[in-house]
Structure formats: C-alpha cells, structure tokens
Amino acid sequence: MLMIPGPTPVPEQALLALARAPIGHRSGDFSKVFADVTAKLQWLHQTQHEVLILTASGTGAMEAGIINFLRRGDRVLVGENGKFGERWGDVCDAYGLQTERVKAPWGHPLDPEVFRERLTADSAKTIKAVIITHSETSTGVLNDLVTINRYVQDHGTALIMVDAVTSMGATSVPMDEWGLDVVASGSQKGYMIPPGLGFVAVGPRAWEAYKTSDLPRYYLDLGKARKDGAKNTTPFTTSVNMVMALQASLSMMQREGLASIFARHHRQQQATRAAVTAMGLGLLAGDHCASPSITAVLPPAGVDAEKVRSHLKKHFDIVVAGGQDQLSGKIFRLGHLGFVADRDILAALAALEATLQQLGHAFPAGAGISAAIAQLGQA
Ligand SMILES: *Cc1c(COP(=O)(O)O)cnc(C)c1O
Image (cartoon, rainbow, N blue to C red; front, side, top):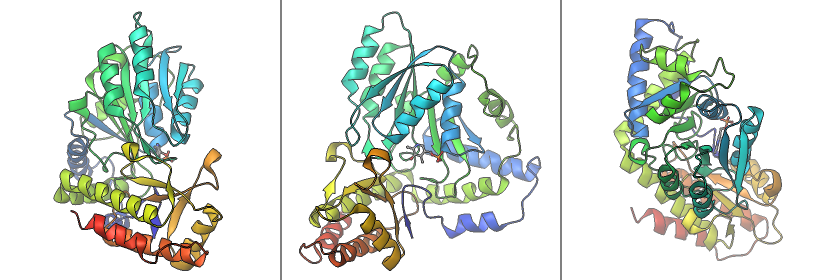
C-alpha cells in the first residue's frame, strides 16, 4: 500500500488500459483518444488553453516550461523552501539564466512580501519570470500562490510558472481565473496513473514569449508539441498505453467532480493532521500552509523516523516517505494524493498507531483514530 506522494495508487480501470496491446500512435483511433484526453486535461486545469502531454516525468514537464519561454541571461525569481524549489533553481542555472533565489526555511512557506518588494522595485522590468513550487512535496508546505501571483500580475511583464505536481488534482488550481502562464505536473501524482507522462499547460503570454525565446531545446520544444497537438498527435512516439490509462483515470475524475475531489483531499488532510497530533506527534507545516496532498510528520522524542517507516513496511506493508536532505531521518511523510479512499486513511493511521505503540511511544489508545474519524465524519 503506497502512502507516498508519488507514485500514488492506481485504480483497476487504469491498470486494464495499460494491459492492452498498444495501438499505433499515428492511428485515427489514437487521435480520438488524444483529443478526448486533451479536453479532459483542460477540464482539470480549468483552462481554455493548451495542456501539452510530454513523455517525461514531472521534472521534464517543468524543465520544458522553463526553457521554452525565456532568453539566455534572463533574470528570474525562484521560490526555494524545499527540495523541488532547489531543483528549479538548478535548472535555471543549467540554462544560463540569472537566477535569484527567494528562500524560506524548509517547513515554512515562501513570504509573498519578499516577491512584492523585488517585483515593485523592478521598474526597469528586468524580471522575466517568477517560478513557484505550489505544494512543496519535500516539506508538505502549500505556498501562497494566490498572493504571489497577484504581485506578479501587478508587475505586468514577468511570467508566473508553477510546479503544480502535488497540487493539481488535489486542490483547485484554476489556470485561467488566476492568469497562470505555465503550469507543470506529472502523471504519478494526482492523476492516479504510473510515472511516465508530464503535463505543461501554457497560457497566451507564455506563447508570446516563446517567439523570442532562445534557449537550446529539441525534444522538449513546446512549439512542436503545440503544433502537433492541434492535430491530435505528438511530435514523437508518445506512451500510447499511458495516454489510454490517463483517459480512464480522467474519466473517473470527471465522474467524481472537481468539487468532490478537492473536498476529499481536504478531508483526508484534516483527518491525517488531527490523528498525528492526537498521537502526540508534531507537524512540520503549520495549519495555514498545509499541503492538501502530503503531511510531513515529526516523530516523538526518542522515536526514530526511519524506524517508524521500516516498522510500517515490515508489519503492515504500508510504504510512507522519509525526509530528504536536511530533513533526512527527522520526518516521515504521509501521502494522501490521488486514488485514496477514507478507508485507506483509516487503515494507514491505525497501522501508524500500532507502530508507535509497538515502538514504545505512550499515548491514549485509539486517540489518533478517534480524531481521524471525527474529521472524516464532518463531510
Ligand atoms: C514528484 C514531484 C516532481 C516531479 O518529479 P519527477 O520525479 O520528475 O516526476 C516535481 N515537483 C514536485 C513538487 C513533486 O512532488
């Protein structure tokens, strides 16, 4: 049982699509699937603009988003309060951009006021993009994209580029309403299918910048993907079966409805947070900045985070994620993203409760599960 923030559990409907014999990627049958999937992706992104499908992981989608709309030496602000924010700074460096990192300590949200100061001071309009990780998976922090984006819109020139890998499909990211220029995500997270596809949604201001962009690219040239996408095909052989699995998973999502999907993630986030608190554990991210899809937990004094993980795996066959880099050994992370039912949350939290008891951490028996039930019952 995977309770990590990707790969996430995959429903049978998607698995069956993966088991089928592939069809030709240039066939009329596949074009029909591709057109349907594209329309469904626009529904999920709440956009009229292109959502391009890349045969790449989430990093490839984000790299494509960065390198198609900027010029060599462009000044960019990159929010960095965890592992993924760091990665986008590294990508910008690799392509010779003038990268300015706006940092916050891991476990804390980015401060929108720092972005406001930099953007309002930039009367010469030298800042070409602001790059934000919406849900920072390494810490379970949801950054305040709404406020940061408002300052970007006030600036008028800079593009807003968003890593929505663990927020898309978990909380509302209305691309058109917010005026987001680039939104990247990956198949193994909220999409409920295995790793292998990346998605980049691109707005009109970004396509305008594409015309003058001069960074090197070939496979990840989004202009090619856009041109072929308009004909319901892709520049290169796409992962045909993954696209068919995506059709199955997006159909399930449409049946559930956006409001219900977001409410389910919120309810499970609340249940998880209430349960771990009742068990005497700490939360890395505060209530005001909690990710809808991932909860980073601080073990009690004297209990090793890695021991909790290995016990959960060995005795309950439940996989939770560990801490990365500076948080290695200090936290464990519970994923509640994608194809996760309330039943799964109760099972994982009960197993966590048993684990803590077996590792000698004392707390009122049943406290965590009672707190979770109370939250789940509020729906
Ligand atoms: C998983 C993830 C990615 C993408 O990672 P890949 O391994 O390239 O798929 C990017 N950003 C965030 C916030 C993620 O959680």
